Image 1 (tube, one colour):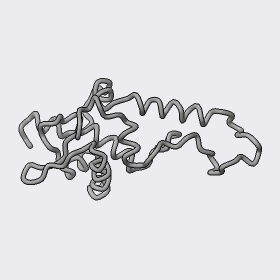
Image 2 (cartoon, one colour):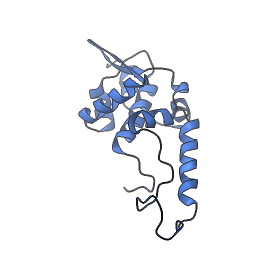
Image 3 (cartoon, helix red, strand yellow):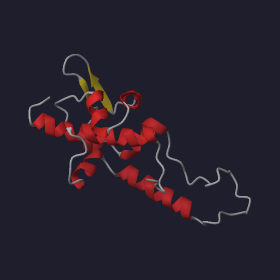
Image 4 (spheres, helix red, strand yellow):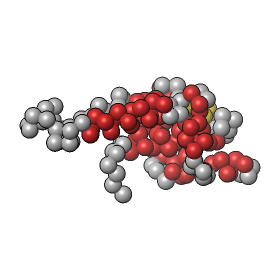
Length: 153
């Protein structure tokens, strides 16, 4: 389904994977294979995203049997902006829908809408933490938490 808010696949995977790790807690590492299965995404693509997140200290990999990934710091200290920027770089700033630096019409036909929407998204990403997402979300994002609670991991 198309969305007016366009976020790359990598950023969307990163946001969801980080939410899965936050949901699981810091005690039990979750493998990239399990996260990819829960999110129904490519493990190879997820692994590249996790590498970017790891370079910024947002995730830590645990090696060996029972290894996987955990959050690099508490969920309450990780903002959506940090996650996005670790994967994509700085958030775009109200770019032209036609990809131009200047509008051929002199000013954007949408007025200040693009800047307003971009400002709202940037503010939301800057002030929203993974913990905020967990507190607001009623279901589970990933099945890993249920498997851990059931002792199946």
